[in-house]
Image (cartoon, rainbow, N blue to C red; front, top):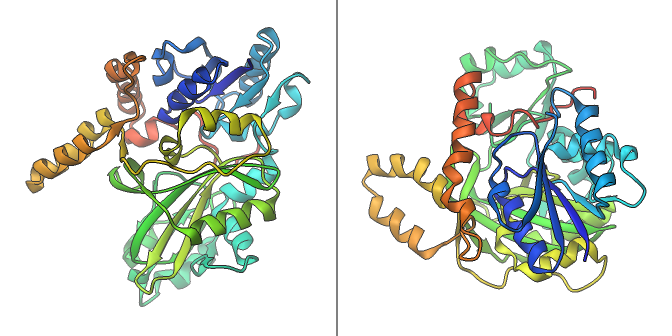
Length: 386
């Protein structure tokens, strides 16, 4: 038995990991900077700790986690969301007996930074490439884009962003003129690829891929965040991920967003060096072991049954589908999928998930942020000095 501390207890992937580790015989602790994170409601979590908000007190946040690790003899810390950037910046604070499943911050920053990530991909040969991408880090660099005759062929997004927040797809000159890119808040202009989008979840040890799932999102919360997942088996994407983690000698969790253009070619758009929703596609006992064992067969999805976040499906796609008259299709899709939040032997997270959503709604009203931003604003990292 190992003692596992999972951070980012608000995330559905963390709830899944609680069940994974418990079923494999481990003792699971949780930490988050909000009071009612989703995974806290699981009966398989031994204890949940409320810690400092990393965006406000980075050092205090990591010190809180290090104290938990010391007091409860934690063997492994697994960050799941963007709090990983704060944790990775202060790995030396953790006791010697505790392993943190993360690379140091300089290595993660290269992947989190959309411009630097494209440079890494450009060094690879293979079936997946990055679209043409340009850095826009000043008003001077922005001027040619304001006058560009074919803006509909381009996508603009901040170098540091998530869930497609602030992303402009085929914008007008007037929209581009309102941007204020700086060295501290740079943007990228990326050639627009029209086609089928894919995402991945992967886990690696020292450059060796141990778990991998590719999926597409049929329904989303807003523009970027998927909430209904369909497994996809694509050998080209698997080969790309294996090559990339080997090149980076990477240890940890990461995901990629890709798109297959109308010409059939695959393009990788960005990387998320943290857990992603593809984790829901993987079987329980083998996944827990991949965090602890450096060698073994590659774990991939064994079922094509879709997975979904049922309570969020009713909050986002249902109103949109109701207006379009496609409610019957939506309910058929929901009946065909597995709700990742519900388990017969652990029902409370699904039944009481409205409490977690309510805390996010209150935060959104108080801060004036969209719901997707309100869910993560206290753990986001946008390249600021820490």
